[in-house]
Amino acid sequence: MLIHRHAYDAMIDHCISELPNEGCGILSGNSTVISRIWKMKNIDASPESFMMDPEEINDVLERIHYLGEQFMGVFHSHPSASPYPSKEDMDHFHYQNLPYFIVSLASSSPDVQCYYIRKGKAERAEFNMI
Ligand SMILES: [Zn+2]
Image 1 (cartoon, rainbow, N blue to C red):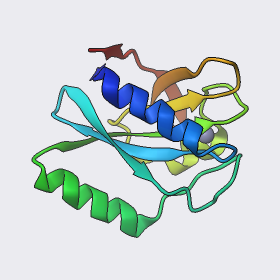
Image 2: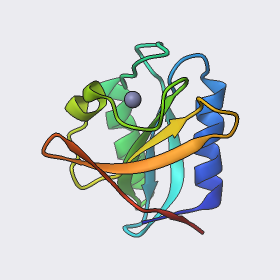
Image 3: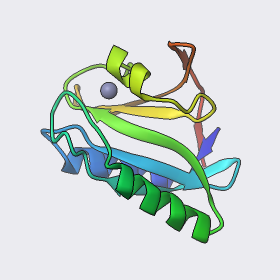
Image 4: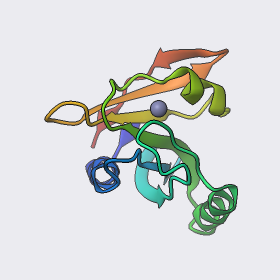
């Protein structure tokens, strides 16, 4: 999978701006390249969990459709934990064909990893920046 560098940087910037809470958002693009991020409100407003507002998700999915783009994935941050999906992260993510990015801000430089969540397991996915 490919992600534009500006979208990758914007994802990290949004997560940093949400500290100390987890940040979250939606990714869109064409079917092969992620090119845009949608900053979403974390309605949990928590450093240890996130939840998106279903109405905001619907609104963003409509806007993605209007732009002729596709829903390409979801991201959220771990302010003080490794970039590995928690049990709750896996239980709450139901898009088995979409990548799930996790931005860890636990160390001095952000560590971003990407997974597919299938059958209750996290499979690491490779991504490249363009
Ligand atoms: Zn998480």
